[in-house]
Image (cartoon, rainbow, N blue to C red; front, side, top):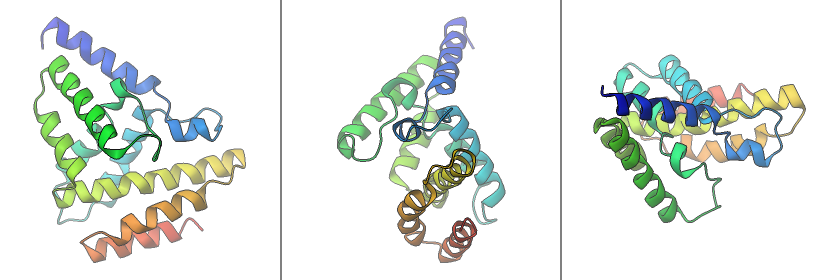
Length: 179
């Protein structure tokens, strides 16, 4: 890597570590997770829960890059802006990431994730919501905020829409174990 790419990578990682997730900030969670925290958690869930028929390396890559654009366009709460506008902002921000660190594979992975165009992308897209439920439970247990039911209710339709019904049943059992 050239010096400028390394500097840009340092900036990207630092921005991911310092960007607090908007949903938790809005709910006044003390010490909310960052985008980097969330991406790590999502990657760990993918590692532990990916079924054998999925490409684990691809799942891990998708988990790690899925929110990278937010380092430059911010983290939006659902309903805060129109989905088309969010997609446009995130695609533009991901192009900046790709240009800054000269890693074109990131755009391909990001598009795959956004379009849920592979079983791996659909799986990680669903786990993204499940991770929110896990985080809500952690915050609820730690800070006595009532959050889990809200996030579980938003996650269940995504799990139910999975094409892989066995995987959907497995994730539903995990979700129910949080009760």
